[in-house]
Length: 166
Image (tube, rainbow, N blue to C red; front, top):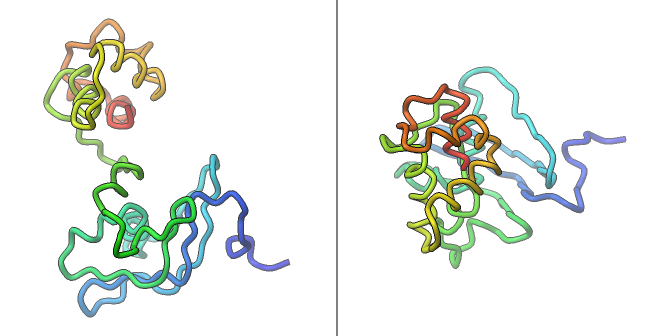
């Protein structure tokens, strides 16, 4: 049986084929082939500086924001090549969110942090209902439901991460 990481997966949310990443003349990532399955936890493990975060940024085209960055190979999200010329990188980032190790909520209330994304995306409705639904999905509602006006910056690190997810 071959390397399980290289075996094709029928239900992959991401398929990476021969992905390479360059920052100017520096080759940061080389020849990555990987299927990331739907609804499964996938961990990238390695020493500092080996390219884990750079690879993750390839999944939502965040490297596009670095002028010297160049991605090679194919990155598919639900079967579509996210680096195709016709694909809007902003739309990719809307669909493929990222929460970084150090969360950065807005210096606003918990409710305003949650509702901001909904309003930017044209979602209308009662702010409290929008916040409640999103906070429940992020497993934070029970901890903050009586403090929605409190600043998101006052939450613990783990709570801030879940707030950013919401």
